[in-house]
Image (tube, rainbow, N blue to C red; front, side, top):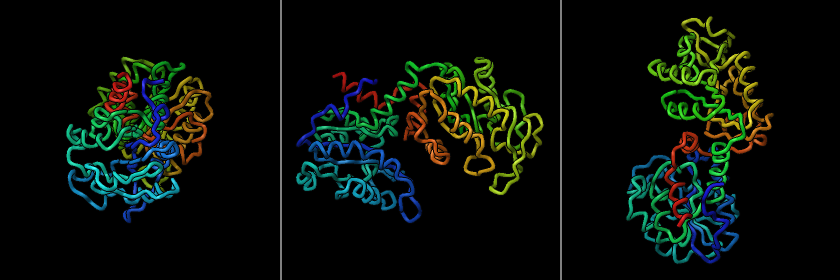
Length: 395
């Protein structure tokens, strides 16, 4: 368990509570929310504070607006409407909120408001001290329930926690930190990590950090292709980063036997739903082949590693799982993790999409809503927002 003061430990009756949530949800061109997972994940903390008699204000970032400028496309208006539906009560949206006003004076216990996109405020991303103090003055209790933004030191994730009278973690934040700490601080062995994705460069430091900690490091996607090259294999015209082959080879040499490299693959001449899948041994790839999934021999090896695991950490699908012909590897991984008795934690948007597609969500021990913060925590980095909450808890 982590050293955090938790919302559940705080008496909030009659107090104004400021909750930083992660409500950065995807929307279609018409502004309709296409996936409300993050909104639903934020509900328990908000509902708890309301039920215990707090006057609640919630804020989040959405998109990448220009600081200091309101833009309708980045407004939290659709989020306010969805929050109201889920909570079963009105959730007014407050536009210019930093310095309080009538909305703040009138906010009563049991009521909730959504404060407009925090990134509309100049100084938010730079963790401006004066902005943080003004925000802290709005509340008696500050709650960070946005683990997905914990790797960023910003005014609503970090600065306000420094100046608020009370600063604590919401249930989502606390659960995420607890789960990741359990997976990494004293894991049941063997510890198996699955890290996949398009680019080695974006995950190279985490691959190196994890290789030192884990008993097996399974790589997939474009990352695996770079390791195939490093091991002297063929990848045709597959996505890879040849300039990082040296780095990948260094990991293979430093940790022999720890990073299994695919030996067969499901290939095609092009990436398309109607492309013809062809199973090939890695050494038999043609120059115009694309690796779009791992083959059954590689899958069998990976299944064995997962079956032996005591703890499993998963970030990223290992093939183009969105296309059924190339979904076999990711499906096999998902089902192997689901069938395992290991403590399993999975995170990242593509990973969650795969988990939902293959219907294994109820058999993963913990599913993280975070992407970047999840990876940085795995890497062993201290997340600024978590560090601030720990400092406040320590007094």
